[in-house]
Length: 246
Image 1 (cartoon, helix red, strand yellow):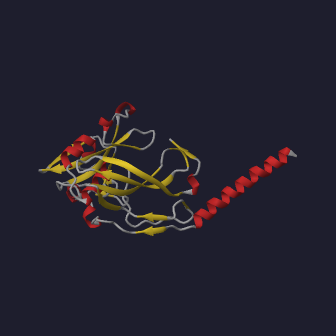
Image 2 (image 1 turned 90 degrees about the vertical axis):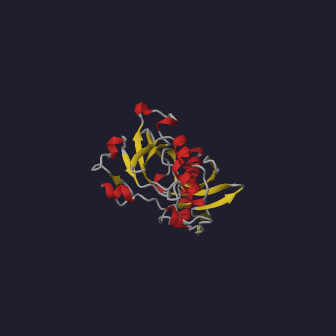
Image 3 (image 1 turned 135 degrees about the vertical axis):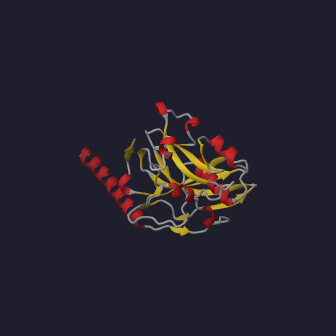
């Protein structure tokens, strides 16, 4: 009798959980499109010189620079057109170069941002200054070259470059995804207390759990320091719930 009772409770919990997921997937949040003080057009990253040199941009932003030899020269496992770095000053051409750290190190000197899961991939940048290709390989080098932060567009660029988050100006949530927030505001930048508040997005891609997409706010100082101030889960793929990713 007790066994039937427990089975009934477990079955009820499962049914309630499934219904909750289905219902959440049917809900649509109020998406607010407001960039604040940000000029979105001015955030587009210029990589034309790299393209003219022979790099080929793929549909998803991946750069094939094998014909130029840049990938081997700077030990790039991957090269990408970075999003949102058009506001940097000085104005230089810039691309993302992701390198594989030796011995699986987590040392911050291995790169600017740790990417991936178990694969020790680190983000660096290649710039063109005075006609020469140069590598910016650490956070300190990036801040030294580009600080101070003097505009909303540059604040966005610092947050994107120094953290593993991305801007989204025209958000759409796929059908059947589980909605976790009643209201979502797309990427914006606001000046606050002499600093900048930058609103970006990310996803929990590694580890075990529900792997939600979330919005995250950063404070960017005039000196170029970037710190996370708040985070909110906004939606998730129901097919990834409970999944473990290495």
